[in-house]
Amino acid sequence: MHKLTNKLKGNKLAQIILLVLYVLVTSLSLYLAQASVTAFLLLLFSLLLLYYTELPDRLKWVIAGVVLIGVIPFVSSTGPGYQSYMEVATVVGIYVAMALGLNIVVGLAGLLDLGFVAFFAIGAYTYGIFATGQAANFMPFGDFPLSGESFWIFILIGCFVAALFGVLLGIPVLRVKGDYLAIVTLGFGEIIRIVFNNLDKPVNITNGAMGLASVKPPEIFGYQFVYPNQFYFIVLAILLFVILAVRRFEYSKIGRSWKAVRENEIAAQSMGIHLVRTKLLAFAIGASFSGMMGVVFAAKQTFVDPTSFTLLESITILVMVILGGMGSVPGVILGAAVITILNLQVLTEVTNYLNQLSLNGVISFPEALAPAKMQRFIFGAILIVFAIYRPQGLIPAKNPVFDEESLKEGSKKHRKEQITVEPDKGFQA
Image (tube, rainbow, N blue to C red; front, side, top):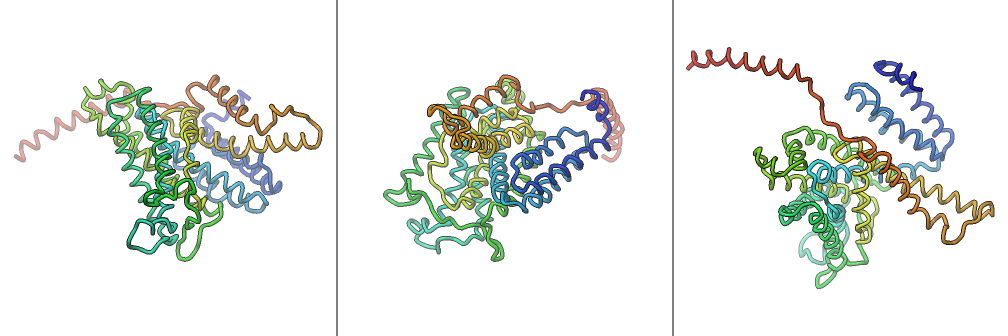
């Protein structure tokens, strides 16, 4: 195996051939097996293999696009598990976008946030209130519910409103950090959930604990998006935007400022970094991604209530970031995918299988160790194993490596250009 790995290193053609063969085999398995969870997961695994190849980044994006847009929807569409696969893929996309938003706050800026799901709730309620008849209770004008065509505008509105609340949260917590910041953000998350739970009196805005039902699905030119396979493409488009935005921010001036603040606030401030602006931008941008996905969540579920935005959701998103690798974009994507698939697909399938064996009398479990009860225990045990053997995350963050000699040569060349340009300027003057 080690010899094979060494032979593949540097041989891009062999890597492409092996990757294509792997995708073909797993796609054929999923196509023929119709409802094979293993084949579906192996096909998704091809994206991780693609990441570890030495192909150019643009080619990787093209191949990933072909797999996500063409291969996965096509080969899974022939079986009875089509919608369930697309549902899993859609939820994975939603959590990946939220984890990338939290990665900006926690991983890049070093601000521990335990109430991140509040921004998700804000985005969901922003669309849910106006896409149901609820807005008619307090809006004296307008015709409610709004049509599904307003969904596309509400993605931007949800993004803006969540970013605004991110700034409102950031202002009072600028003076605290570490454990105290975690406590304050935890309180903010709970306050938002309790406010939505009780905002049915004296004016009924959120319908309280009853939630908002019959939220209008997205619509464009009379075509409604109702099924998971349709939402899959909406989530994919938003996720692509989020990934590109995060990558651009990471290596920009503001991204370097976030990392400097994370490492040492005093040193960062002494270097001229504006702490208030840097932290508020981290809160606002991270929250905006969560707000966009909140709008999608409300439209997909067609129902929103406060129980969907508990502290456990915030902890789960934080675990995705830590497990994947704080500050690492590919790591956070992988961490979010692993946690979501474990929760939604793998552990559920294992539990159902063990329950079936128990019903058939093959295995007998004590009531206290019933598979359904042990699901969270197994999930926790898996997380502990990951934390022990991968303490830096599944894909740790890496700083770009620059060639010192080329930088020196570039600096010398720049100085020479300045020397040759300065006399010309003087002559022109």
